[in-house]
Image (tube, rainbow, N blue to C red; front, top):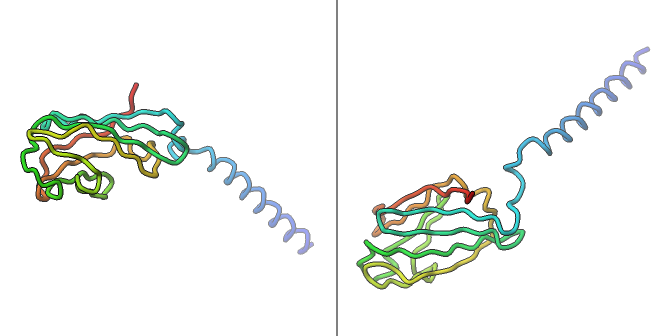
Length: 139
């Protein structure tokens, strides 16, 4: 009788585990990678800027944008863009300053656009925020 109870408990545990795995793998569409071609945008009004993010393939996101005012210091190391706690200087991103703004720029990096949507982008000058906005999915 004890052997039957152990077998039943093992079978029930295994069944429960399989059910949990099946449902948890479908629980959140946010865990799925963004489809190629998915687009999101952020407007940075204080510097009359815009960044467009595009999922360019299964594992890379492209960012392209331009800032049109408020960028007056010509030293690219003094400006940075921060997203998800990661900060990169204009120098690291290859952004060229042409006061009072920048030239259009385009960069790509490994990533999933679904993880960026809803996040705040902040542009800083000497570590002081000068503009920020939230990344919104394009409709």
